[in-house]
Length: 531
Ligand SMILES: Cc1cc2nc3c(=O)[nH]c(=O)nc-3n(C[C@H](O)[C@H](O)[C@H](O)COP(=O)(O)O)c2cc1C
View (cartoon, rainbow, N blue to C red):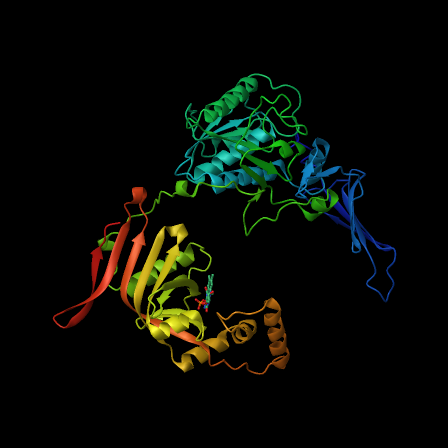
């Protein structure tokens, strides 16, 4: 992805020019640079905040300007947009982006390479799970794209893959030597599940020379094997499929046809011709200045992810979706005698694993017609008396519970390959308990509980907004919002627990706790169930 290296050691100096004042900030790390930010404020009056603009200059060259009346691109950037309004960069702009990143913005090549390699590794992990696609061959070119591949291989190793590196044109530079010695197995293999094509980036042009011409042909041949429906490895190209023209794509039509393309920073023009099933974007470090200057219109990265999918995921054959659960065994000698203690342990694990809403549970109820219905609710507390959630006492579940006060709750903690089933009789919690919990909730949730006549048919959202607004006005003075009578909690008192831990080849662990009484003493009997 990166241009041959720019002036990394260049010194930096920031000049802030404001109105008639001039303020200079020098960084001891970069004492002599001609790089400066300039804030121009020609219209400020003592009575107004005024307008300002910021120009980013490096070596007398102006890169961009932003102002508080909007951000303007000063240099002409040729941006090509596809119908889905994603930006694509041509070769010159791609080079300029790197120039700015490593020039005035002070990124080092090591940083960018680390981020690029991590983006590639996370993109691969999004699609190809290590259980099914374990052996990864990274074919690394002599330049920065090769460096991205080396970094990706290191991360993949830590993600549980077995990377092999083919690095035929090693460079003597310290940076690259460091990358090949960081945890990478040195051996190559002829048999692998994923091949990372990290041979050439966007600055490459001309015809690939040995040994890369031959390596490219081997990747093309892999595609041929795939067409014959033989199990073969998948190809993941970093930024540009090696051998493709950066803007025109696969000119001969006989080049590599990757299954996955991980574009870095922004897709290059050739990415429009990519027809494989998985196109990802990586490079979640692009500063707003660059986004504005190049008018980059790119998909938002979800959560804390280092990559984001571009375009729709391919339709999958649902019957072929399967996980091979790999987790520690859950044996009888590890099981707590008290299922509440066991639940607390697993719940703590779920919290620690960072699962979103570990307290979300499926609640299943049936009315007198015997027809079951399930929905998610949030666990709001549990102890030896039972498991508590809150809801509307006039909802469908409430009607069913009034007819049949038995229910089942189910937790599924995906990241841990665990589920917990709990079944038992249900009772309303005391009014005092519901009151207490209601008033501990945020004001918006309290109003929401009053607004919603849960499970009834309504003409549209507008009605909800209207009621919400009325109540917000009514309680805008900070007065206490009374809990509606039709809202409160339920407590399920467990009569059965089952702790399930996923294991390879569907030989899962299932430990069931059922109450028994021996010599008049109540205890929990633990039985192992067949998976
Ligand atoms: C993750 C999640 C948590 C939820 N938590 C609650 C909850 O605690 N209480 C509740 O009444 N509804 C909750 N809901 C909404 C319910 O699933 C359901 O739509 C609602 O309670 C009406 O269900 P019913 O018509 O079967 O009574 C939650 C939904 C989700 C997806």
